[in-house]
Amino acid sequence: MNKRIAAAIALVIVLLLYFYLSPVYFQGVRIFQPRHFNLDGARNYYTVLSSFIALLGIILGFLYYNHKLEIDKRAGEQEEKRQNLNYLIKELDKYDDLVDEIIHFRPSNPIELDRIREKISRSYEKITTMLMHKTKLFGFNDKDAQAILRVHSFVEQNAILMQKRFEDLTKIELLSVKSSYVDLIQEARKACFEKIC
Amino acid sequence: MKTVDIGKEFYHRLANRDEYQGDGKYTAVDFRSKYLSELDNSEAWSKTGVFIVLDFQNVKTIGPSFANEAFAHFMRYTNTNPERFLDKVKFINISDVHRLIIKEELESGFKGS
Image (cartoon, rainbow over the protein chains, first blue to last red):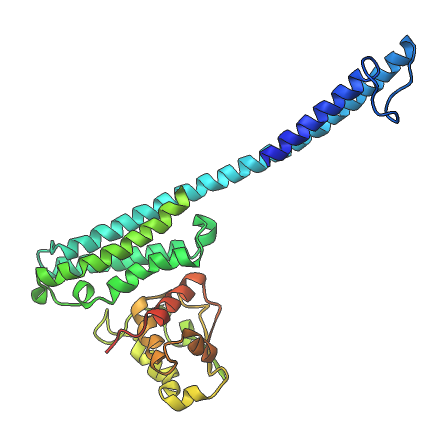
């Protein structure tokens, strides 16, 4: 768009220069070249030309203003999406921290484990509520949203992370799910960061 | 072909896979037995046409476990082809994110016992 505007402005300047200078300096295209005229004729000619240029200036100014409004609007929408994405990333980080607590066996008793599992479910619900407006809020397509949903599909249906009793959990078992989980959460974050950049 | 308003006729929060998950109520196993039991055989899948329409307008949330148990269960009859399932079971008034949750479970396959 900028190249087109620059080309249009250059063309207008060339045309203006032509109409200003052609009566005085050189032979132009015969059909556009005014006849040689006296002082009054020249004054009239340049008066009409100046009025025309003023009108052209107003039209160009209006077009520029509209174009600038469009750019500002798009920039505003981009900024809003960026802020929404930051919020989503924060929520994903919170979700990740909670899952991490379980993977590294930090809950010290069954109640705490249940509390963390419940928080994971609540965090997921918050994320899916945000994703309900995925296109408007984040500029996400289906593939981006699915990358995020895939994380909880894995976590919620993983018996070790979300179902096994506290007494039956072992560190080895918990660490065995880490690799698959980390791959998924990284893909989810990638989907978000790609939209920010 | 019947239409079921799931949120009103069953429950508005579809979270539990079975009696062992969450509070064990309104489970996917119950849902499947109540509305989709006639599809739980190969013969049902040899017939063409929509079997049931599931209206999601009153559903507030659906979890992956529920979607997997209720719907991915039938991938055994469709040659793991989600489109064949969706030809038989139509979802209406469903949000994008709910649709994607179900799609993810259909594509990843049944994980229940």
